[in-house]
Amino acid sequence: MVLPGDFVVDLKDLDIDDQHYVGERAANLGSMVGKFPIPHGFVVAYPAYFEFLKHDNLSTKIKHLLGATNFELTDSVHQIAGHINGIIRSSRFPTNIVNKVTEHYERIGSPRVLIETIMVTGDHGQNLYNRRYKNYETLGDASLLDVIRSSWASIFTPELISHRHKNGFDHFKTAVSVLVTEVLGSATKGRILTADPHSGDKSNTIVQVLSDNGDYLVDKKNLVINRRPKDVSRIELQRLSEAEIVSLAKLGSEIEKHFYFPQVIDWIRDRHSISILDVKKLNFNA
Image 1 (cartoon, helix red, strand yellow):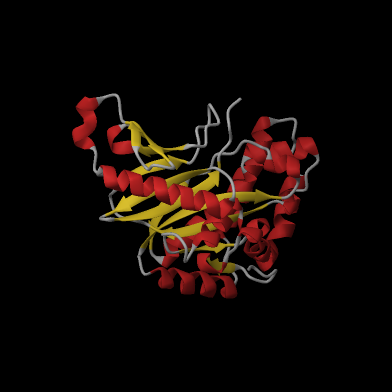
Image 2 (cartoon, helix red, strand yellow):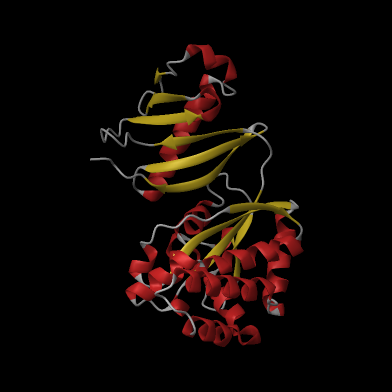
């Protein structure tokens, strides 16, 4: 459980009810730690961003820049966005946040980590804005802190600044949380759908293996593979046995029970073990 003053939180300390602080993906993964294979990681919760803005009076500096913006001119918005991004990326972290990030980074035990911007909080309309964030792999605590600053700076892209201004959203009620996880080695990847998103059929699990570009349809009750990739010429690329595919289908069913609803599950096999990278509720197509 995340408390209001928690700036950096280990995944194992998160639960599904912590979405407000860390976003849906991190909360989902956190709720699975100890029950399912999840990579080691932590979250820089969004209150850390607001704490960062208090440091060196950043909020006032950003407010002055936004106040000088001519929102009728695209060039003006882009120029101000560039200045704000420069201020955020060059400003110092509060010592308490640096210490917490470094401590949790060392706990992961892997020098290379994946950093993902996973949530925008604030007005509901702000959350509906279609955003694309970059994910970064990095090495070392100094580089990690730089990428976290870049994630925070992503709040002030020209598009988001204009969107908030146009809709009357408060620029300072918007923040992101940052998910940091260990990077697993080169491996087979895929996806599990615990129901058919097109037909709504929940009796089968679809196991996708990216290396053979095929879908495996596994009967949930009998655990029999009913459908294999159509392109049999690519079968030699498959890195999973039929037993492993059935095992993935069983894992998908267990995760579905955990969340009480059909899920889309991203997985990776590193050497000979499976890890879950992402879980989200399956949306059925009409």
